[in-house]
Image 1 (cartoon, helix red, strand yellow):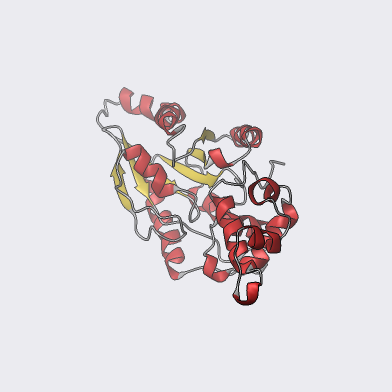
Image 2: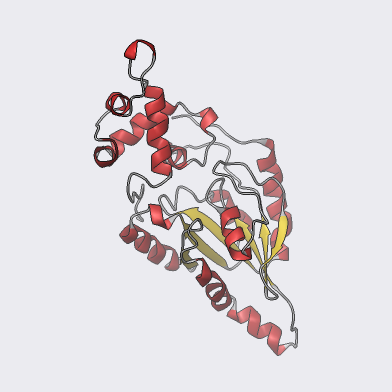
Length: 269
């Protein structure tokens, strides 16, 4: 699966992060709990450098619970603070502030010792498209201050969002690297919707998913193939021919919505 997707605003976002990283005390990196490593942009490590980091395993309600715990331990072993949450339901989001303050306790103590009271902790929120950055910020701010949509490439400009007197979040557009050398990474990001559907072949994508997770179709669709999904859902083209393209779109959409059960696409090494 050859995916090339690097809109012009992605270059602008990279430059924005490079310029603004010095303005923040920490970085909150949001990833998809179903494929945490695939949904981390390797460019971000270069841009963030040694800034304290909180990795947020979002969409955890869609992922296998045991696998998510393993990923949490994996990233903690690399020195990051880790939050498991689901921004749509709000589950786990309230733990972000205490986790952040614990991670930045050395900065808080240093400021207190210097009499620098009233300064907010500033946190840059980063991640690839469609991992839930805007949903996370909205949950934290308890309002719809940031545009949210279930598709990649919505946030196009930076904006500061004040959470309380102590914390400010800097929202940034999602940044996706310019090409995928690893076809497995490309598949996982296509499955979860991090890449625009317009650049994908929906049937090819659905067939890839079926080959990797054949059991996921049985309970939801009572089917093993796209043809059977189309027949069972009465998705028929002219002449009564099964409409496999509609079936493919339905399969991927329902996976993304968590309707096929808790599925994690990769495990920590």
